[in-house]
Image (cartoon, rainbow, N blue to C red; front, side, top):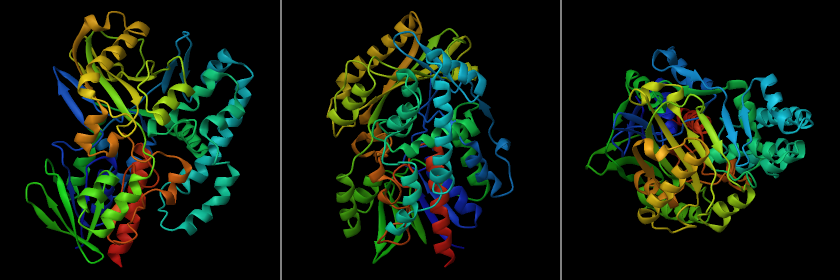
Length: 493
């Protein structure tokens, strides 16, 4: 029986481990933290349950597939609940926009902003459907191992003007500025600047329209737990709380894993769901391959980080939907500050997560769980002392939510804590504290990302946000499908 190790129990690592174990490969999943999930960590505090994220679940079919591999059903282990509207978008001028896949309702929302844009939106959806077919259905689960594979994809990329940004494409179809922001902000959820991220990422609209937006009953943490259950029932092994400190090699082969506790294992194949720079620089730091790859990655552009305030308050808020985007007074200017200038601006845009409107069990009776998330520059652009600045920034964010949505929020506060770029670096070994790994620009996509299989060590593989196709649950689960296909073919050979 062939054996494999997967480093890191995030969504990508879990999905890969399930695929390998389902195919009869004895798989060990090794996680540094005390709980599985990676970025989808969970805290329980003062009776409140706080998911770290991700919290927007799309394309549930890509998850169901992980159970179907062994003839089981995902709903045996987890219930997914539909979320509607997908998001409520709110601007400082008081404008609200409810985004969903109910066509009649959505057209009414668009018409309130600019009636002429209803027709333009329909044309944009046709465009999004095209890039979905080419970018997601055809290429989203297939590894790009050589430049020839990129050349083959070039005609489709050219047809849909992949060199243009999502915002540019959206602006060619609709003219209302609020609507342009509503149709381009999605790239922020995978670490991309709408002003520079390839227009291919417009496929997210088709993904959501067809598959919906979902929430795992009990929180994203319960989906993670369900994946662990599926992996273990197949016979897989999970090691928690034991960080990998070295990937051992001999010649051009990865041979084993050594952990902080002194545990050691030898494997036929090794895959990393860990941070790509950390894997090459630290886990393979004693090898020529590790040093060379880490140096090359250090020259690339990395996505920003996040500042997240988790808070539990007294009262129920049925008028606040599950997902909200609170836009600030600036859009392009704020993005420039975050991505290019490395400035912690006075203003901010927020994603507000309100899970108790869907599942009240995530808070004590009569209370509500929230988090407010602000994109911020990574520590390479903004070397800030978050120990000092963090409490002040958290209070500013709470004040903004209080002003716009929840009067007397701070008077209702029962518990709160915040998570900073420094925490991403410490807890997840994230290079520069980036929340999404490599920035998803065209020159860092597909073949230009870290390859699903290493070019020099042929039994070393990658899964997760840093490899193809990129961040987000469908992205990392898609990377697991691509990487598993490579690993299984190589192990059989």
